[in-house]
Each structure stands twice: as C-alpha cells, then as structure tokens.
Length: 232
Image (tube, rainbow, N blue to C red):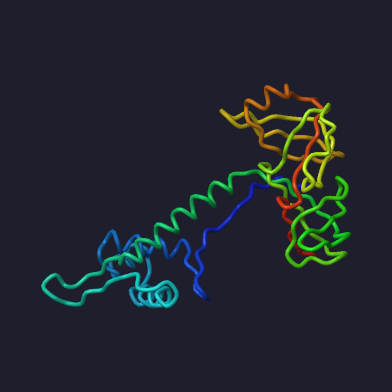
C-alpha cells in the first residue's frame, strides 16, 4: 500500500478548449504589462505563439483580450471583462484543487469482483472494498484510493452498523498520529496495511486516541475512487 498525497490540476473546459495554468499566466502577464508582446517576452514565449493561443482560447471562452493597434502610444492590450472573470474562475478552482491536494490518500491495489452500477467491489489486502468506478469490469486490476478526509474513526464500543452507504468498515489499531494544530492525521493498521484518517483535535481527545488504541474505521463507497491500474 503506497502513501501518496492526492494531486490535481486545475483546468477549465469549454467545448474542446482547455484553459490551464500556462493560459492563466499569459492573461495575468497581459493584464500586468498592457501588451501581448511584453507578456510573451516575460514568459519566454514568442508573440506569434501567444497570439495563436489567445485566438484558440477565445474560440471557446469568448473575447478575452482587447487589442489596440498603433496610435501615439504604440497600441497595447488589456483584458476584457470576460477575461478578468475567467481568471477569477480559474483562481478559485486552483485554490480548491490545492486544498484537495493536501489531503493524504491511502492507496491499495486489487481486482474487481463485482460491479453494481456506479459502484464496484474490489478484492484487496484489507478485504473487499467498495468504491466508485468509471468503466471498470470484473477481473480488472485497479487502485483503490481513499481520501483521509472520507474516513470516520469510531470507538470500539460503537457496534452500530452506521450509514447504509458506508459499505466499508474495518477494525484497526492506531500506529501513529501526526498532530496538527486543529486536525491530526491518524495512521491505523488494518490487516497489516495502513489506512489514514483526518481527525479533529476535539475528536481525538474524545476518542482518547493514542498509539495502540483500537478503533473502528468506516468510509463510504461513494467517497472511494477506483482507478484503472496500469499493468505491464
């Protein structure tokens, strides 16, 4: 079982046109310098390449840059209201992706046993785990990715079955706690593997969490991602 942190890439899509970090940098530079040529030079790109990219982006998102030719001031460029709004949208999406990227993930490999609509059951080292898939079939090899923010920690005297959507429920033992100011990352051993969970300081105190504390873990199938595993 590997221990990566989830990563993401902010992208806005309109039709077949994608707006990403390089495009945001171009628009920001135009807004800052007042010129496509100066913006391109700042970014180490050619003016022709920058103009082609703007034309491509405007084909999907509308007029983004207002260009003025010649004149005593030698012309210039500025962002339109649409361009400024697009940058705002991208900044908000980037912030959301960055926040999500900071959440640790537990990743374990397995083989799909059953497919039931958008959910599938996977045979893993920690038993059968249910998760959301996109096009998996029986016998496919997949990665089961569980965000630490999706895992609920409960005391051992909690025998309630929990929510019907929480198909994944395991007994484990705390092996470590990375303590933050308000949120802790708890490592829990489950059948020899490690599952991570985010627990608030208040909950950690209420549960009296410490190394060797036995707990129940549960996480919803709809919050568990199944990703096709590259083989060979």
